Image (tube, rainbow, N blue to C red; front, top):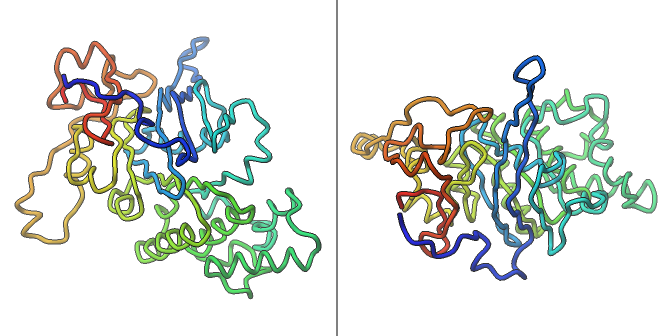
Length: 333
């Protein structure tokens, strides 16, 4: 077992650079497992990390690992079971979220389900502006909405149209415009392109990058597509069964993955070059992800890990700094 240099994934980052700090965050759901008995489903279990101003932190992992719940809990769309969430130097736990809703927004995964079918584009984008009284009169409201539509590549002719009249990519643009309507500093992008055609995904990703630069945005980008995450992210966190198992710079993660789970994920990425693909050894991920209702003792990945040892069943590994800026939760590193 390697020596612990630091145990805090915030270490080494100037506090003035941080926009968001998540400390020991837990989100448990009570699930009925019998006539009377209830069991905790540990969707997010003791997760800590920070997000610097202006960066994109990518969160990846298999379906069911807790990525979406993490994003929703940070915004307090789900109330945390325990832990702390600090935004721009202030804890938001127990606070009235109305003011923070203007600072922290979300782009949802499904553009077909996240838009009210009874409202026009102008009402969808303008709703948050109405709630927060961000305009002086109707003319200013219309101008702001048209400006947002132009910002995300929507024609002004769409102003009074309804969601069913749009493609998936256009609907996601409406969702992005809605998130931008209150001029936030931080946006959770919850798999924003997973429901879209591959040809549209690149357009949306490029637009998000342009908006980040022009609107001074910070992203938490949740996805399961490692190629997309690599393209857009400054740093990447890998989640498994509610835990953060690795966290480092994007380039470093792909060049030198440390955790066995990360190594398996990266080995599964298809490579366009057939010669390179044929010579590369793929690491097979055996078995199914355990149920979060009955997780393994010790390391949550040990039941699928080819390198598991006795200590892995006895104690949960801490997320520790193995090398400068590279954190991993593994006993055998």
